[in-house]
Image 1 (tube, rainbow, N blue to C red):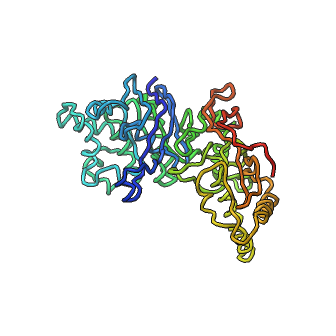
Image 2 (spheres, one colour):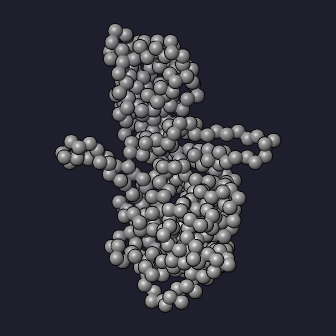
Image 3 (cartoon, rainbow, N blue to C red):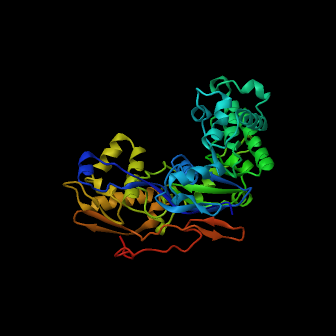
Length: 433
């Protein structure tokens, strides 16, 4: 096994306000990568796929040793690089090289292509003569298709097209003969006409040099062409991982199915239903309870993690669709809803001053009747009229764990496929409205 990542976590602490920093109060952290594990064999291509903010690039940087993990380990060829000091990691970087998204940013504009591509040879002090360095640079440029080589050696990155710059960046990545290349969105900033050529170049280099890739992308279409296996990330976690053939033919996680349905269909006569996730990616600093995808999932049910913030989002989504007069009538029934912004399984929806609690109960019932298929109602354990308003209790929730499903080795983190391991039940869970 070339690479093993085990329970990798990368958390970024939030700074908070001045007073909080002076008092030393913990204001939380963004869990950019939160317990990711996978293995990578030699010659394999693993795709890391997800929306912006899913943690893909942070994971790639942690694997490369550019970010120090909060917990977990990265093992390259038996060496636990995540626990080594920087002076010992630097020599190992010969064996793992990055290709970044934007070649204009990753190539020094003041260096010629010869200097930029040959720079890793100087950094790692391989003891080569100027002629030997030039020969290695020429060989790398020829491999990536920048020929005639003599034409490109003296040129600067700004004199090249986008595709040529990315070829130069790839040449720089392979010049040290690495075993692993981490390609972070290597074609996303290129013209459509160039993308297929760069992907084919990466395939050819894999065949000729025996390279292993981690391919970070938001594009499942290119991942299908290039990868052997794909890991789907959402809010810092892998929610599904499997072979390309199995994942595309039988996507199991609702998020994976949504991503696949979002791929454009080139045939205008062939119409397919698109069930895209509702809403936006949640705030990583305050992620949803239970399954992080549950507020956007059409198949979520009781133990997925429904809570007070979901109820507030439901109310606000309905109000956004109402006219001004209808909104005013409904909003006047309710009091201050700021308490619903604090994650809780037991919350009181307050009645406005001078309005009775029964009016709140009637309003919630109207919302339920208007959207009986709304998944949130599957997570409500009970509602009770209390003097201050209506007390809503949600079912106990659990965080889904990545487990194998079926015979093809696919792993999925979803309660639809595994019996959820619930926490303590909410008091009064079996009560009625």
